Amino acid sequence: MKKVITYGTYDLLHYGHTRLLERAKALGDYLIVGVTSDDFDKTRGKINVEQSLNERVQAIKETGIADEVIIEEYEGQKIDDIIKYDIDIFAIGSDWAGYFDYLKEYCEVVYLDRTKGISSSQLREERASVRLGMVGSSPILAKMAREVSYVNGVTLHAVCTDDIAHLPEEMSIDLVTSDYEAMLAHVDAVYVHSDPASHYEQVKKALEEKKHVLCETPVALSKEETSSLYALAKEQGVILMEALKTAYSLAYQRLLVLLKSGRIGRIVSVDATCTSLRDIEGDASTRFAPKWNSICTWGPTAMLPVFQFLGTDYKEKRITSQMDPVKENYDLFSKIDFLYEDAVASIKVAKGVKSEGELVISGTKGYLYVPAPWWKTDYYETRFENPANNKRYFYQLDGEGIRYEIVAFARTINSDVNLSRIDEEMSIAFAGVLEDFYAGKDCVRINVAPDAEVTTTVQA
Ligand code: C2G
Image (cartoon, rainbow, N blue to C red; front, top):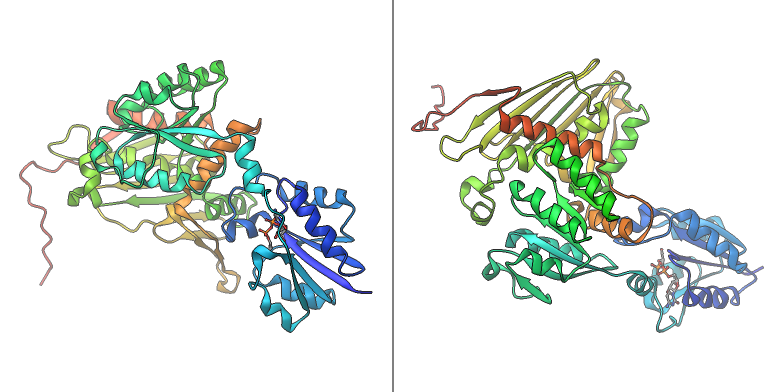
C-alpha cells in the first residue's frame, strides 16, 4: 500500500484545497492529512485563521478524500510523521516548491500545481471587510497602520490627527483629516487612541454614529461614563472593545489559563511593574501625548493580571503617587496596593521613574515569574520549591500583540462571538481606579519640591 501525506491549515475549505487533496490521494492508496493546530499557525505567522481546529478537521473529514486526519503541532513534525506512518510520498502545493526538499531524505516529495484564483485569505477579505478609521497622534497611527496590514478583512480608510505633517508618506489612506466627524463618516469602525480625557466623548460620538469602536485603554475616566458607553453600544447594536495589547498576546493568554488551572496553587499575591522613561527624554511621544500620565499609560496594563486573577471586588486600595510639580494631574510614579479578602496585590507604574518591569504571581504551590517587559512577553517561568519542577514557556509574539487585538475586533464585528479579552466589568474597574486617582480618593501624594534637584549620591 502506497501511503501519501500532506499538510495544511485548510481554513474556510475551498476547491483549491479539495483539488490538492484529490491529486495527492491519486498518487497512492492511502492519504493522511495533517491539519495545523491554532498555536502552530500563530507560531508560523498565520494569525487570521477564522475556523477552529475542530471545524477545519471536520471539513476535511467530510470531503471523504482523507483516509486519516492528524494534527500538525510543531516545527519539524513532518519528519516524525513520515517515519511514524511509514510514508512513501509527501505532497503539497507548488507554492511550497523547494521548501520541503529536505524531506527527500525520508520519502518522495511531490509539488502539485496550486489552483489559481482562490485562497483562504481572499475569502476572508470578501466575507466582510471592515473599513477602519483611527484617531490619535502620528507615532501611534503609524504603528497601528503597520499592524492593520497583517489583518485580513480590515482596511485602513481614514485617520484623524492634529499632526498630519508627521504621518509617514507610505501611509496610503483615502482620507487624512483633523476633523473627527469627517473621519467617522468614511468608515465602519474606529480605533481611538487620543488623550485619555478625550476618549469618552470620541467613543460616544462614534457609537451614536453606529460605528464599532476599539478604544485604547482607558475607555473613560469614570465608572459612570464607562458603563454608559457599554450601554450605548448595546443600544446601537455595535461593538465597543477596550484595546489592551497584553490581553491579546498568546503568551499572556496561555499564562492566564495555566494559573487558572491551579498550576501554582491558590494565588495570594500579584506584583506587576510597568515603567517607561521615554517621554521624559523628550522624544516624539512627549509632544503628542502630554496628558498620558503614568497611571493612564500603564495603570490598566498593570491592573490586568490583578483583576483577572483576584477579581475586581477588592476591599481597599491605596494609590501613592509622586506628582510632577508643574504638569497638572501628572503622576511621575504611582504605586497602587490592593487588599482582598484572601490576597494582596501591588502595582507600580511610572513614566518618571525606572524600575524592573516584571510580573510575579505568588501561589500556595509555587509562583509565576515573567521577566521585563512582562506586558509584551513571549516567555515566562513557573517556579517551585523543588527547582526540578520549574518550567519555562516560550511563545511567538508578533507586533507586541496589537495585531491579535485587531483580529479579535474584526472577528467580533463579523460574527456573533465576542472575542474581547477585556469585559465590561474590568473596563469599569479600570475607570474606577482612575476616577479615584483624579478625585484624590484613597490617595497619598509623595511630592517633589518644585526646585528639587534629582541627584544620586554614591556613598563613599
Ligand atoms: N492550495 C492549493 N491551491 C490553493 C490554495 C491552497 O493547491 N488555491 C494548497 C496549498 O498549497 C497546500 C494546501 O492547499 O498544499 C493547504 O493550503 P493552506 O491551508 O494554505 O495550508 P498552508 O499554509 O499552505 O500549510 O505545515 C503546513 C503546510 O506547510 C502547508
